[in-house]
Image (cartoon, rainbow, N blue to C red; front, top):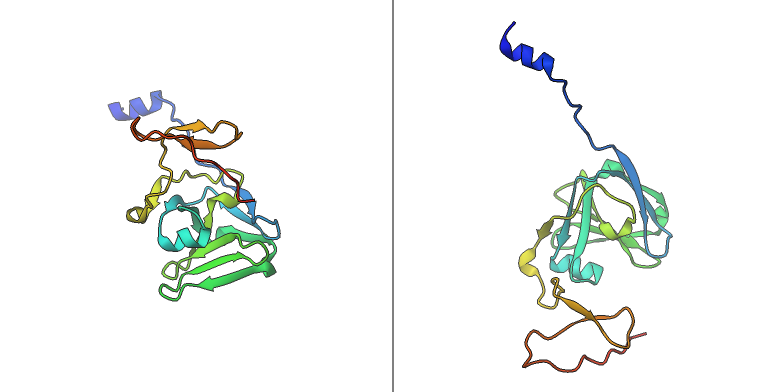
Length: 177
């Protein structure tokens, strides 16, 4: 018997571990729209583009992407409105009641859909390790600087000035609500 065949018989093969297919569900802020997606999703990323920043009202949007066939509107399909971006033809869907962004569809990729990661409290099977439009990163975004508690305001953290020369008293924090 050839030596290679003998080695194969001697060592038991380890089973290949595949990620189990599952589901996770999410919803808009008011709960009118519920969405189910198959997991694991195909990809996840942070989108720093102007369009996503404005659509989400945030420094960037974190998305998960998957096949359209793995997405199901479990509740509230009649409460979803769509906006088609005139320049790109991409479609953004949102809840008509609370305005939560729900689905981002690129015209050039009809089989794929992208959903804001924040809709899902459960795991999606992918960590967002990619950054899209990173050159559009805003100078006012939090980038992981050291934070300290703001005295007298539980739950509020602040970034201390970088040098001792520019050190000043913490800003007066007055909530908008």
